[in-house]
Length: 284
Image (cartoon, rainbow, N blue to C red; front, side, top):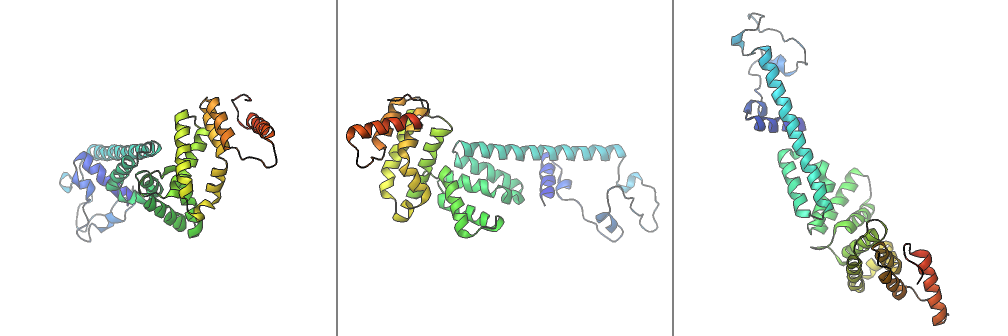
């Protein structure tokens, strides 16, 4: 099916409708051509001369070779264009351009509808980036249940993890946006350094959304653990952005206060912990 679609694209590229709709055998004398293998010599029709003639429509060997080469070149161009569109969709997803990613996927599937299943997971993530978080998660769950052999509950857990990288607006839930902000902050803290303003923005999002979480969402291990560790992740984000002053202030104000210690003892504990835990910054 995909090969036929590529031949159709190639035909359009060459302006040749004969490739897109190859002629079908019209009677029993031509039927062997439908099952013949490459290189087989076809039997002659009853009563005919075994030698090909110009009138038979076979053309010269040079003409046939040239036509095959044209088709091959057109198919290669079609494959290259499909690959370019796939790479473009991936790049747009990485830039959080959901609509642009979906446009590339729509173009691919308009050319070769059979490729839709190959891009199902990419489309789900692009839908999330485009603000259709619920639909994107539904597609992820369906894919893992059908192809991954997972239970619906297990697939929903995977969908939440994927949504944490892509659900920022649209119909995303409070829990979706909390997971995404936590993931963004962790990425900036430990992988890709960002600006101090980026760290401040993510912490502000979390401080605004956390009180609005439903009880069930608040008990989710990913959310609960991420919020409990904000003193460390937030400080590490600033440290990775080379702002040790903001790193220390964040660590100090968000550090969980130990019971039974004086203010002086607590300050020493926090400073010692900061020096041991936050790399790139001196002990305050």
